[in-house]
Image 1 (tube, rainbow, N blue to C red):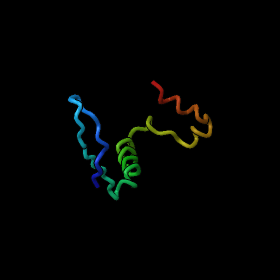
Image 2: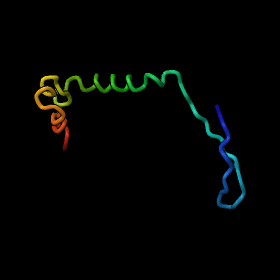
Image 3: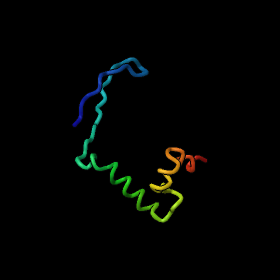
Image 4: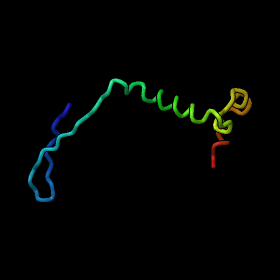
Length: 69
């Protein structure tokens, strides 16, 4: 869907119209899940990337400090 943007003055002072195209693909609602899934798959062999339930229960949010550099 294209909607014309409001006209604005350019460097020469004349007004022009700019068309902006906004895309809304149906798969967009799944994009975050797909990205997390790919990241999880890439990092499955790196134990330093993960926080275990035991670590979280023992340390709480302080467990996130291991990711600080």
